[in-house]
Length: 197
Image (cartoon, rainbow, N blue to C red; front, side, top):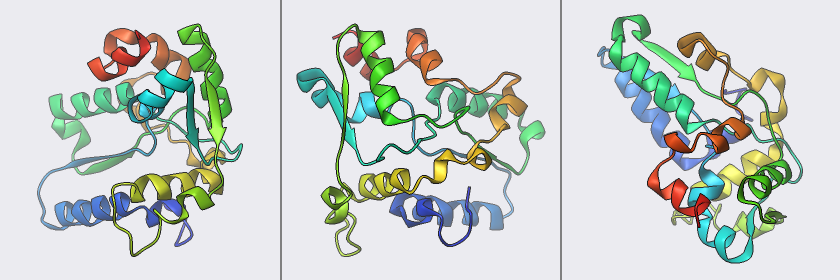
């Protein structure tokens, strides 16, 4: 979803690395199907499980802006369909998003309902991520920091951010956050471990 040089995702080191690798794949002439996704619906559960379990909260810096969380189930389904019928997806890149943006406050409400306990979203100031986002600090939190900057930018709220590629490939709309939370049979053991705790 690059919207020019101001696209906040282009500052995420992991995105930069994937972009370089993707370009090598494209230029070398091999067959490929590229899948592009940003925030996964599983992120709050997987990466902040301890905080969710111990304090009933997860945190970020979205500042009330909508985040377009994509379903890991949709990404997996598109990948399987591309592997099963590679000629149908020959040399194509798919951008996989959720059906619409959703605030982290709303994610907390959905988690509260699913878990039958209060879950809060704690909105931190961007300054809390500033040190990790320093170009001189390439520690493990730098991608997280830049992803929080991307959330706070509001770029994902635009209707133009939403892609129809999941529906195009799979024949059904992209999964909502509610759908994702209710599809326990598709979750990884790590996701289920928190939801069942």
